[in-house]
Length: 356
Image (tube, rainbow, N blue to C red; front, side, top):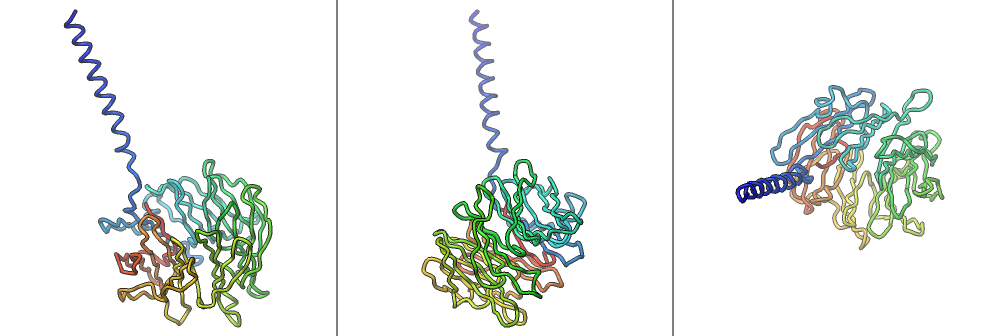
């Protein structure tokens, strides 16, 4: 009897050990994201159907230049305009193709392709996108913002805004949309921001801003910032701040802004224009002062800057360079403006990045 009890005890002990080991295995399999991989969306040429998604391993330096095609046996499509990572998925805007490509961020495997086309089959020309509380919002040049549910991966609502909306930002349960009028250059560009209540998904009001607003960001105090490109003739580009009560102020020190990103209340702004040198200007949103008119401090020379972003985990600044004809280069700089690494000839017109 004692022998039987001993065997039973040993069996139960072994079972407990096995169960314990099995339970401890789960956290090992579900490793947290470690920011060792950078995914790069390369825009490609208009009507050439040659946009690519590249994958770069930061630790090993290995590159897969056409990562999406290698995994899915097809290309992304025509003109990759924007990309974000939300949860475990990538959301990629294909402007001319008129699609939103949704892919697994780790594997690159396509999960779904959402059509962004009008009744006649032409593209709505989706532009930029942002995610918030289980929804992804997409601006399109058919004068709309589209809402995508991230569980069903279906479009669940669309709202009409101003002319040719481009940049989009969310703050205090309001969606701010920059209405550029980018396709209306013969009759005059637009100069408004639409403000959408996120709960009702209806436009509350419009605010008048500078001509041709295209990019938009926010600081930690609830202020919105835009870069407006002007009309390319007698109205120049400008950088503006919109306060929580709707007051619009032009920041005169910033004279030729393009795309920008705000991180920890510092705006990293692409400065330059065709035929003129490019640089990244740094503006402190709290002190309202230009900190530096050239972010790069180690002498690294960069040509035409097409895109900029920040790794939110490390604070590293990513600068994307192109000549619009040959594969471009992606540079990673520390917060102090010193080069950490660069990825040469990664793809045609690198325009957006995401981290894994």
